[in-house]
Amino acid sequence: MATLTPARALQAARRVVVKIGSALLVEQGRLRSDWLHALAADVAGLRARGAEVVIVSSGSIALGRAVLGLPHGALALEQSQAAAAVGQIQLARAYEEVLAPHGISAGQVLLTLDDTHDRRRYLNSRATLATLLGLGVLPIVNENDTIATDEIRYGDNDRLAAQVAVTVGADLLVLLSDVDGLYTGNPQSDPSARHLPVIDAITAEIEGMAGDPLSPFSKGGMKTKIMAAKTATSGGCAMLIGAGQALNPLAALENGARATLFAAQGDPRSARKGWIAAMKPKGAVHVDAGAARALASGKSLLPAGVLHVDGQFQRGDPVSIVGPEGPLGLGLAGYDAVEARAIAGHHSTEVETILNHPGRVALIHRDEMAL
Image 1: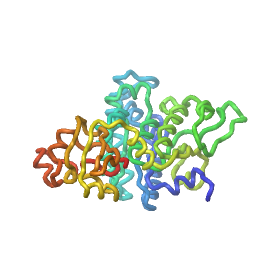
Image 2: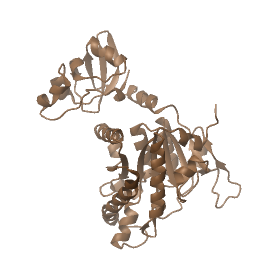
Image 3: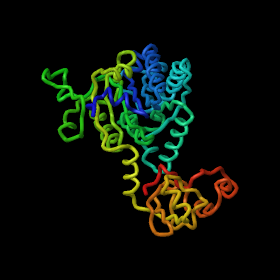
Image 4: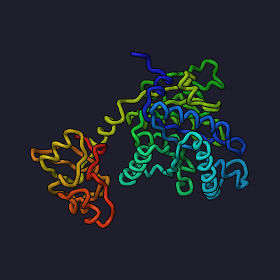
């Protein structure tokens, strides 16, 4: 078996989330246009070999403050929110312009960490991102800084990127930064500091190696990157930290540029199913023998196969799936209990008529269950 390296991890990845820090995108209040054009070429290259890509991009506040002529240094909360509102338009336009020559359509997705913590909103964001990827669209995700006050004060897009990576089931998260990975100490002050190319497990010793952020525009120091790595790797997604200042940073990483790879703890699908299986059910969905066979073969649970529904639950809550011979597993409900009862036993084409609004095909999607 080939030795695990950062380059091999990127070469083999089939679904990649790339996080871009403010310091890479913006210099002295201006967009680094040449850099962004080169990054777009890298993304096009990844997609050409069959990889799906999601970008999590910082930069809206840094761009917006320049447009508004706000002073250097720390901004008041209201100023940060205003800068984000203005800068987000600049950022979206820039991505659209650099991706268009490659025939890539981009879709803007604004999230907060709450959107990945609340199960109902989590399912909505997961479904939207999955649909965009299925349509061949490149999602550009950013923190919704105009409303996410806690994230403007203390947050960063490293943790958001990790949450997005777990949400979409990515096998690799790439954090492009102003550093080329993790060292045993601060290389700027400790000449004996060693670069660590691969981290198999995040121990207390590894966490202790994280230093403070160096850039006044970036909130994502090494400590937050370690936090992101813990989230990503525990969700079955490997994470790579690499330097991104030069042109074509992703191509450089594929060709062996220095970086640090945090190995995934399992695979995304298994990690997600383990997470679902550990939940306490809030209700039960009883299915017929045909539905039980379909589930065993990897299909989603459709309303037609449901006999009856027990309990009170909301969309996104965990429910037991019970077949004629007993429990089959757990899943995250695609409908609340009232709607689930209303559509039980009916064909998916009847759902809109019954509920008076367009419904989802599955009552529990196959990706949202652990059997």
